[in-house]
Image 1: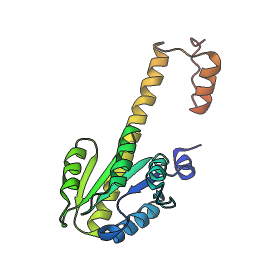
Image 2: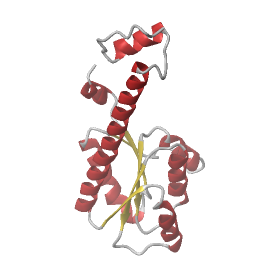
Image 3: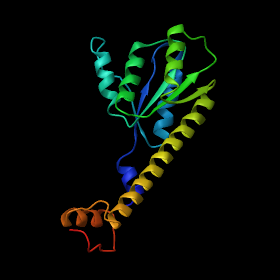
Image 4: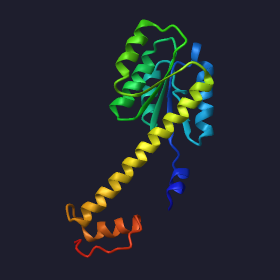
Length: 188
């Protein structure tokens, strides 16, 4: 199976975290459409009752491969908990901060705290947000791919150097999965 086949069967799932009322309603709609246009799957916290909304949203965060955090003028404890859940589970967070609005002090403090742990971009228009969203997604996917390639090369060089060894069965599975022609007879 080729990489492009794998990507089409397993599109990225992107959780969108933001307040869905007030100043970000249109922004959220644009982000969902943009994610769909890129052939990814948008996930939102929709569907939870008001009683269990925080628990519901925190569970939905774990379904995503990436969390897109959109900040406007309002502070939201649910958004804070979603972002914290993503960070605790090493889910990459891409933050887009709307800059032409007055922010609540609590939100300003949270942004200062977050900047050290996330990818952070500012936007002032929907057009600018769409551009920044695409750039950040391309950057994070490129970084992951480069890391994958490095790990792939390292593991196979370690096998060649006998730094790590596999059982014959494990090595045969590895050869078949990665289409390795060369048979390493030193493996057990």
